[in-house]
Image 1 (cartoon, rainbow, N blue to C red):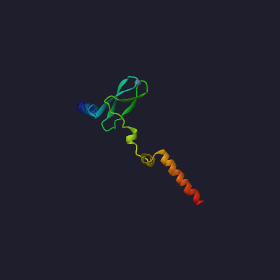
Image 2: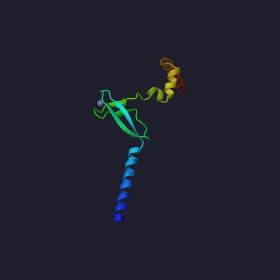
Image 3: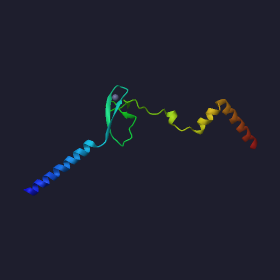
Image 4: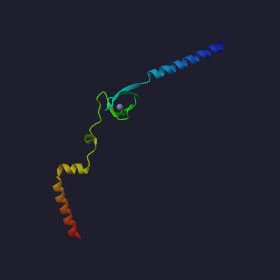
Length: 110
Ligand SMILES: [Zn+2]
């Protein structure tokens, strides 16, 4: 009888610990607004990298963060290519001229 009571209390305290663990697990709720006007929230664990966009749970459109966090502008974030740098220094007519010069040189080499 005493043994049974002890086991019972052991189980009880363990399940209490589990419940407490779930309750206090770090969570953060992120709110989103979709273009159609749906407002919804998604729960993330504290370690999760919070997305700036989320598929609307109601209509499937891309929703953005209600707190105003926006994805960085793509042209700021994207690394510049050699072509981008070239285009900053040279206009298209200039490049065409350079191309023509190079072709001229190549033809002479033949
Ligand atoms: Zn929606």
